[in-house]
Length: 138
Image (cartoon, rainbow, N blue to C red):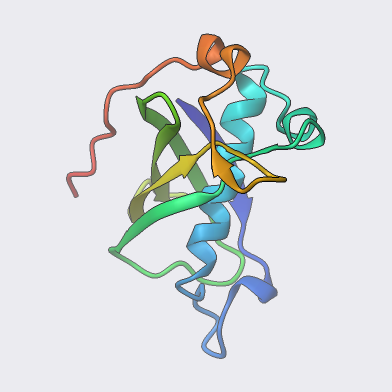
């Protein structure tokens, strides 16, 4: 599990200064990047080698709004590791600990030139530790 933070900037919000719903998927991406970094996985090096991991499934549950200047905590969990896919689950909370959103993505590893799925590289599989699913009870 990884925890990182994000301060809501003006560009994250809509006209009402509430975080635009699709931006939570950007925050999920931040969580994925940081959990890989924590595990010692250099995703840029994988991309340079022609390996990508696009999102093939995503879901987000919205519980409360986040607004301009909120400091959000992004919790990222790896809850499933298969031969070609990895499932990340996320919980985003505000500074008081209130759950703002929860969700997940499934990413498939692929050859960027052929755009075909591949087995997850050994160095990634050996570094990944599968977490328990997060508690998303409100």
